[in-house]
Image 1 (cartoon, rainbow, N blue to C red):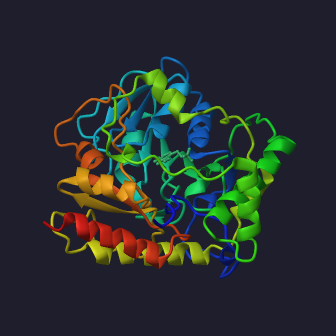
Image 2: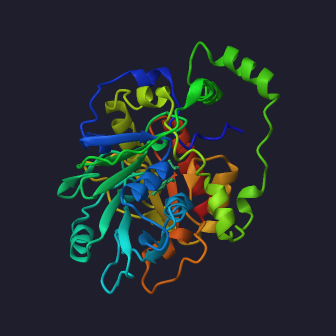
Image 3: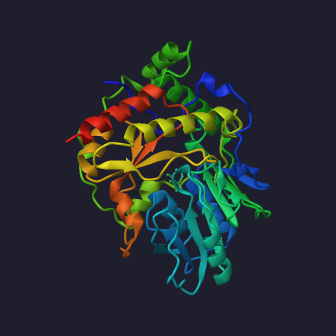
Amino acid sequence: MPPRQPTRPTFGWDNLTGGHEAGLPAVDDLPHTRLLTSGRAALFAAMQALGVQPGDTVLAPSYHCPTLVAPLRAAGATVQFYPLDAEGLPQLDGLTPAPGTRALVVAQLFGLPRSLAAARAWCDAHGVALVEDCAHSFFGQAGERPVGHWGDLATASLSKFFPVSEGGLLASANALPAQPLRAAGAKGQLKAWVDLLERSSEQGRLTGLNTPLRALFRMKNGPPRPPASGVASQPLRPMTEPEAMADCDLARSEQAPPALTRWLSRLPRERIVARRRAHFAQLHRLTASLPGAHPLFGALPERAAPYVMPLWVDRPEPVYAALREAGCAVFRWDRVWPGTPTFDGDHGALWRNHVLQLLCHQDLTEAQIAHTGALLAQHLTP
Ligand SMILES: Cc1ncc(COP(=O)(O)O)c(C=O)c1O
């Protein structure tokens, strides 16, 4: 069985090649930036920068990863969920913000950033701050503005775009308030290097060093354990809020990232964008005429560096379980925050079940993408 596909970028020598410029706007073009340990740490820092306190309300999308919601709750906010339209944008008509609403968090989903003109106007009319969550969209043009430029604050998750073991970014057009961060420490600095070498050698990304490094890590960790089979097809048990909070692990939210994160986030960017676009196009082509499934959106916009190729599947359970069992790089946002209400006409609620997020990052190979495509065809053909 082939090794599990990496769900995030993994360092290899080829990361050092190609042009330095992405050729697209990026969240870190904003004049004020702060590096943190994760996207969730950046959302927590955004809440702190806005002075969110217990009793305040923050609006968040019904379609989410729990790590989007946990930092809002950690800041003490009451989270009010809103439904999404067919583009993944907030359905704000008829939304009355509770008194004490401080922020609207909008996710630029899938690495296909959209204009947030309507959300920006709504926030201005209601005196609410806009937090543009760019965890999926580090690069790109979001309609009339570059990505990250709609929000009063923008947040990003570096580990989805760069081969870092941890990294997040808080960014803004305006100066950021000071935030005390604990230093990573010598142990944290060393661990970042060890994690990088371990993941890279596991994936065979360090030609010339893979075999000795793997032998070294085998001595340290013991023989690799086979992945538990059948786990992917077990139904998810709903979590309580304390379980969801614990699962999101916010422990390192107030810590500075290791120096390696800064270095890796400055690697040449041309390759990152080009390969993501090529992988997206490959997945789009492979899934364009499958029975019972179709790419959620049309062709890739010109000024985007996708995070995933979202695939709508009419009967997702068997095929999702098969992809997970086979170790394909795929996610589904089926883990919903406890207490998320249902709304009429909410596309987010449908996507939770029907949309498979097929990863397309730069360090996957064309053969891995083709393998995912072949499994989809095999399991979707009646
Ligand atoms: C939309 C969105 N926001 C925030 C996060 C949190 O990012 P991180 O995993 O870097 O904490 C994620 C992670 O999946 C995400 O998808």
